[in-house]
Length: 103
Image (cartoon, rainbow, N blue to C red):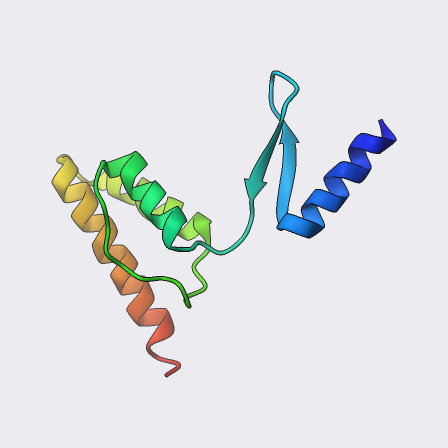
């Protein structure tokens, strides 16, 4: 039991993730870090089945903000094209508002 907690602690420090046991006993890492282009493309492919051409490499956008935009787009729009356009609009607005004011 102590070995398992030590593994959790080391994994959390090394990978900036929390390791959560799932219902079958395996350890599932959950990333609590800023999003990168890979995560953004995976989110767009999973929720919208489309690719996005936005570079967020040097931006510090948390994954919960992206998830919030996805949830808003799914609740507010009826068509899938409208959902994706709304998501892109919110993301671009967030990037332009939060990162262009400092430059």
